[in-house]
Length: 263
Image (cartoon, rainbow, N blue to C red; front, side):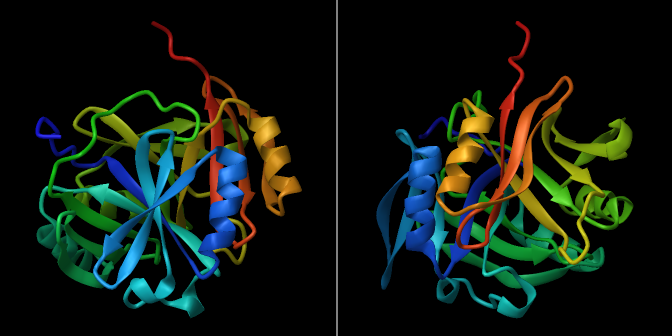
């Protein structure tokens, strides 16, 4: 891994924080084919998510995440990690631009430096500078992370915040009845999106997307295994077919089969 470089702005890790981790592991094993391998972390084992032979994320119990606000969160939720040049500077930038630091910068031995922040509307993510650099960009195959999307009630404020804190630039596209969609980029690479689509009563949040080979069969399998389906499969013209599921522990995830890129 000596040839890995830092890729600021890339979402490099996704973590399910839940009291029902075992339930989630069984569910995602059946639905997405993920497997789990424990990794010793001091006095507990951190359970890594593997898609095939690639480590892509992890499961964490609430007690292993300081300041976990159960009264301000779903029973379970996915937390995203974004690569930054300087964790401490970005954390300070979050506060200076109306957000807050939820977990102060700290070093995780053998992993890197990280901090958890919330934007001005409360959507949280982790900042991280990986000690060994970030994995190179590759085409997302079945079970791998594909995209990340901020759902917020104030896209304009969010765009300004993430520009200052992460260094995201953006361009906006008209998606018809869906309004305006904002694509976040850094270093010339599109990394995520921002939308004002936020159902009533749902707090602003980041929604990760996973690539799948067949959206309809994946959603059908998820429903059979106890998921609820906030968004049934539908096509996004020029992008792909997607759906949204809420797993049996309450965490929400999107899946997509993108249209193959032209070569």
